[in-house]
Image 1 (cartoon, rainbow, N blue to C red):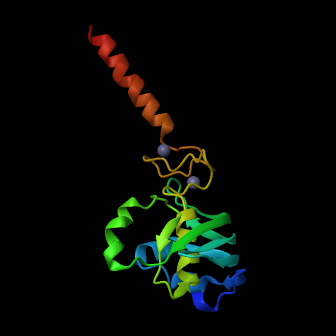
Image 2 (spheres, protein in one colour):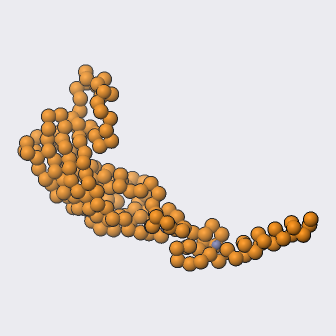
Length: 179
Ligand SMILES: [Zn+2]
Ligand SMILES: [Zn+2]
């Protein structure tokens, strides 16, 4: 979805954005990510676009759910998305004032656009990626997989724990005996 800024009324406009997983997967570049991330539910966004002198304010709400792979136990899980969008898109600066860009307040939620069209697809996709955790976890205290036997420690007990303990004691005992 693209919105022309010169077609926005001064009071702004609310757009409704609804997309399914086909839209989302087309926006994931790396094949590795594509295998790990998918939409579990379609994305719904209500977005208000308000034009101002040198910028366009975007405010809204993003809802949906993504399917991720837990980085510890490697199980798929669903992450609910319920994100507030609060963004400012700045018009491009004339070249002779380019030096002043450095003087502008550095704000994570501020970026430039071409001044003509707002690419709502790109904005929404960015907001989804920003909401994804660096290290996906199915639950905060996920126990992960045992490096020895590969057991999923959230669901089953480790099968190698006993023999490890025994061998550790054996080593200790033999050390003591040598004294
Ligand atoms: Zn996990
Ligand atoms: Zn184990």
